[in-house]
Length: 193
Image 1 (cartoon, rainbow, N blue to C red):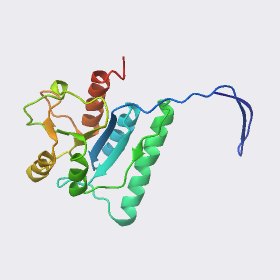
Image 2 (tube, rainbow, N blue to C red; image 1 turned 120 degrees about the vertical axis):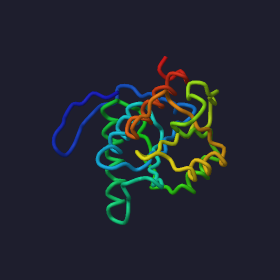
Image 3 (cartoon, rainbow, N blue to C red; image 1 turned 180 degrees about the vertical axis):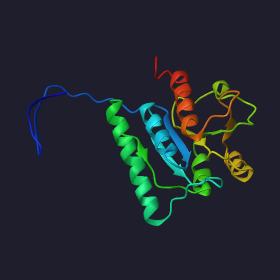
Image 4 (cartoon, helix red, strand yellow; image 1 turned 90 degrees about the vertical axis):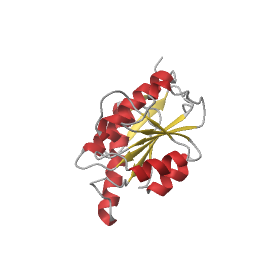
């Protein structure tokens, strides 16, 4: 907490009144977000940041229409990071989430093998609400593109130890599915109590 005594275009003068450290929440919440067309991906990053995601991993899924290549990919990544930074400020988060570099399906599968992995899938038999969640480590949530996760991707993720789950009876858009899942996890983990 600071008291600002002077402010202009080039500097801020402030006196520190008090300081506190808020420990990082456990378990870490990581969302693998498939690339989406238009501004849907940025909306997803904004919502997930407001809901407390610790890391967002952009993923180029088989059925992703949008593709990040060369200069366009770097611009898109910087845009996701800017959206996360702005949403962090707006929601008064004490920590800025990490927005990682674009990851391939193989990289995602490797990361899932070391985490509590969850894949949102419309044909899953088990609801997210029914999972027994870890109290520490990393919960890694995979959100597919508008066209859904391919059978090959799902098989690879399940082989890596991830659990396919559904959120409810309907199918959500890629821009809202991760946010809805995070809200459910926040309640179940006691972060919103």
